[in-house]
Amino acid sequence: MKAFAVLLAKHSRRLSPTQPDGNCLFRAISDQVYGTQDRHAEVRKKCCEAMLANEAELINFLAPGTRSSFSAYVRLLGRDGTWGGHLEMVALAGAYDRKVLVYRLGEELPTTIVEEGASGEMHLCYHERATAHYSSAVPLGEDEVDEGLSLALEGTDLTEDLAPLKASGEDAKITPPGVAQVKPGRKTEGQMFALSFAELKIVYADVLGSDYRGVRHKKRLVAAILDAWRIEDTLALADMSECS
Image 1 (tube, rainbow, N blue to C red):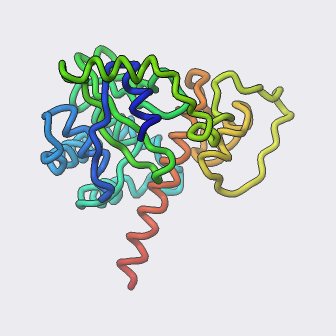
Image 2: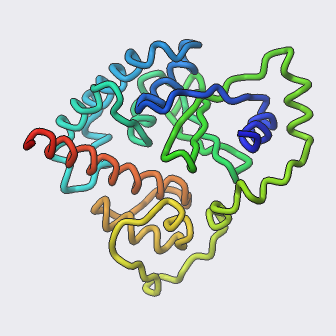
């Protein structure tokens, strides 16, 4: 938590923790939009409505084998405690007309999920070591500014905290076309960040069934791949529970 405090202080923000109950993303966005985490169920409902209204745009975030189950996935998402991720943040960015800024350890600047022409912002923290947990990043209060400035200037040694993230830089070496080789099977987030950008594009094409045509951004590629697997698992677990 100390490392996150230092990172957020540089942006005049502090951590607002959320419960690890499967509602963390919706609690964090509720905190950003309404100033309280208690309206997370309302945020979840709004997310589901936005996803159904924009199915044609959002369905491409699912792996081809699960796209026919888009409506079923949204129904599952409506249940309290069902995890949300990158796909849900994209939907909520549009629903609230706000871009989403996600802070992660090891990165001075947040990843931005842009909603074109957005009128506001939502600031979230992604805790990689806590199994895809999200919390809210709120502005420092007047009585916290001095403490935040001290943290920002502290120069804390974050080597231990950042060790798993050393391979996640945007300037990772790109393997020439036709040379990249990727072993089949699922990978952890850390394993994917260790891949070159060209190798990640191969994984993306394999999982999403299409070539990646976005900007050169490793974090977005990894987030999309992990989200497709998360949705696949959610649907599979639902099928298992219905059969039992």
